[in-house]
Image (cartoon, rainbow, N blue to C red):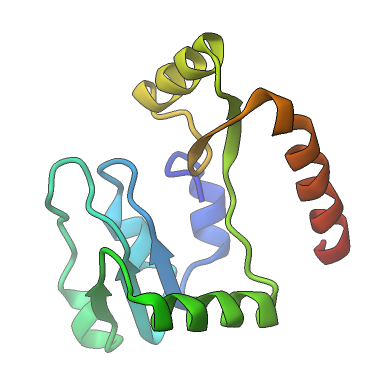
Length: 143
């Protein structure tokens, strides 16, 4: 979810069991917490730029939401996570940029303006079109 998209947050209000967040910026954490059901889990796999997050206490108490985080997992847990993602069709979303001066500058500008949809990923120019086609093909299968 892009942090500026209030409609997306409203549609997901109290409907997620788990929210896995890879923070790329200091986010509106209250909006993210509101997407979690009773007994939901907010899981951070990364650290926002400020190194801190401000969370509202009431939803954690009233809806028994829990908070956890990790920077990385070992080989075993990574394999388990990838197997689960494959089983349930969970895929990473990223905005691709060519690994070139222009691509790097475009990615940095979008990141600096907080306009990257999710993650900015630099890809070798020779592979960029093939990767985009593969992503489109996979999205057609699942959506």
